Length: 146
Image (cartoon, rainbow, N blue to C red):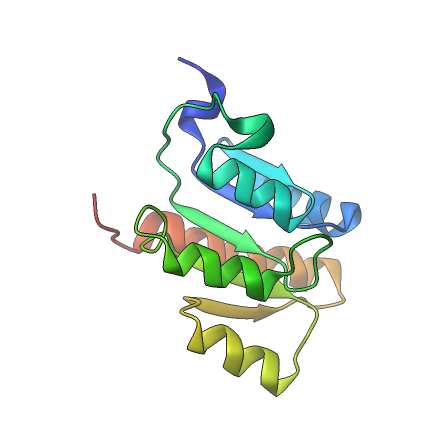
């Protein structure tokens, strides 16, 4: 079976260090087997809607999107709008994982349908624990439509 066919988590993060920390935290808690990391909002759109470099990608069982707010090309807010506006992707849980604790970012994200908003802690251990808890909840505890 093609590896991309089994993708369950899409990580949308432009900062390599934050992405590596997220992947390490997910791996530590056995949640990283089926993760794809994309580095900007345009690549995320291509992945989700199977266009551009991902045009031949088979349909998948995407179960969670971990989304940074500040992204190049297409920012997290615009990406969230597109995810929640499309029938094919609107039911996928989206967790905003960002360094922004600004009230307007939180409010706008929830207005657009984000499922959770997590502010990245500076401390690695705290960051790892936060990502692991979010991943555990959304991947193992939360029931999504089939």
